[in-house]
Length: 252
Image (spheres, rainbow, N blue to C red):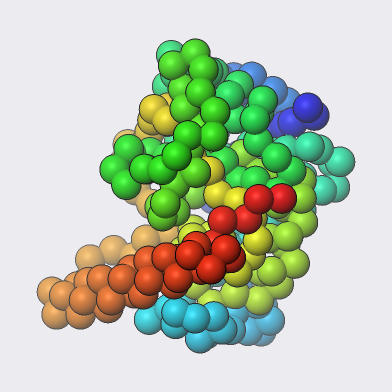
């Protein structure tokens, strides 16, 4: 299988440059650094060209911040690079990821050996919620088809057909990239997860997130948490209904 790695890195986040170099040395395949889209530099017309609120059901309850639009566009750039390079798969890694060198090689090897072209294999940063039947197992790692796709875009192995489908499906979008990837009944990409946890997020040691907004008023926090809980319930309801009807677990 022809596979390469892509590290998404925002050029102005200079404090993360040493971490990018650590990742480059640790990854067991050719590495390209993808210039992340800078949300602070996006114009209103650029955002309007790709962002369409209330595009899919269940409706996403929040308006995207410019940084979330930029994050989505950065992942699209990585998917485009997979196709442009003629790769079978690309490992897309965000620049605040630290690999567990004791676990990651086996997890990556299992994913490469058993994924299909229309698969995305997630490398979660935590085990909570990662439950489902095993697709493959070996050398202390398990490849799962999770009952519910969890959030997080820290590291994923993206097959070529998956990259093609996701690019076509996300020419316009209405929610964050990880939230949209949960909706496999719509985009037609099979979402898998590899266990045990083989990465960790180290944004806190690198100056914090480049996406998340800083402190919010308590009233806003409570309101958003209520809306988020309702949305999560709706996603699981849609996921369950599509699964029972045969539309929620793509197989190709």
